[in-house]
Image 1 (tube, one colour):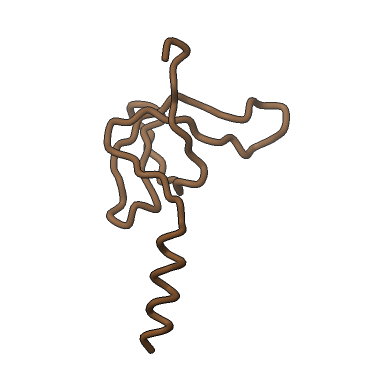
Image 2 (cartoon, rainbow, N blue to C red):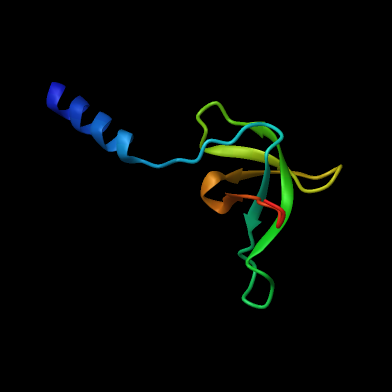
Length: 80
């Protein structure tokens, strides 16, 4: 049983999950069609799931969406 636990821990250490914080600006991957632009945003993180796999982003003042981190990337303004 120890070898299985060791293997799982080794695989988990190789996963490169981005770490987001509340208030970070990010872009959301647009998966609706090829005509639209690939990224939409910038959006702000409203809440982060304790596991770190999903976040709730604020699309507008009234609309919030739960999204997996694989669909997000950090927003960098042109001045940076």
